[in-house]
Image (tube, rainbow over all chains, first blue to last red):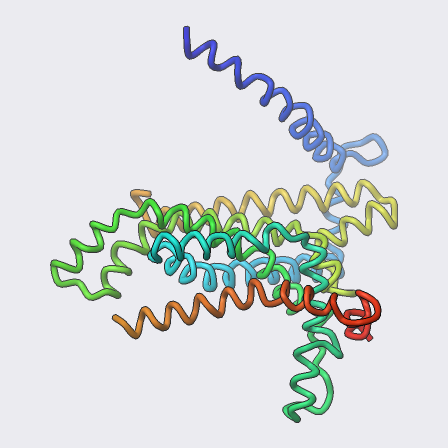
Length: 273
Length: 45
């Protein structure tokens, strides 16, 4: 009885989700299968036959995968270090990790424009020191997008990993060490498998964020398109809402597939997790 | 063990330089005499 009453507390949230998430998404998906009043897959076939869209899709996937891997590689050791730091140091480092999240992605992208531009800090340094003659083309390339996205999502993966590492039972590591395991063996056999769920959740957040990010790719990518900027172009410039809906559905499907694959990966690395 | 810890702290320091460096740079350039956008605009050309 008490549980039933508690269930009613869920109702407002569920109704809100149904009205403002489920219904619009269902309508968006349904609209992609209807053309001139008949059911068809033409919208999807048109996109997958289009070389330009395939190139954009590949660039988006490449940028998202590389961003996720780089965030994992940079974030994991940093989170590990923070989790083992003294309480005072930990709170300072945690505050510094959260600080970039409080800054707008537009400001952060602009700061990378200053660094990566033709007359930006990196090129000025390389040209002035004589290492290169002509400035490098870094800005308005997929590389610039990846740098901007890693900067955007790195705090997110650090915070996610930190939550898992904080709850890690350090007695297990101590027990392994006392039984003769080397620090690396204790890390490989205990710490890493137990922190895999955090790595996977962080990875999913970064991947989905990179896949759907608009501001950073639009500012740092220049003419290079990703799926989200292509969707915006179709909806706002070309006024082709059906094409925009097809792209949105493709993005949703990719997200579900990646979340599924990462779960399989997590189960393999940590079957008990 | 100690070397490993030192390497880890150096790595973390580099990660934080990467995270906070751009924000410090944009804050510093905004104080350049003249206009706030003077430096960024020059970088775009």
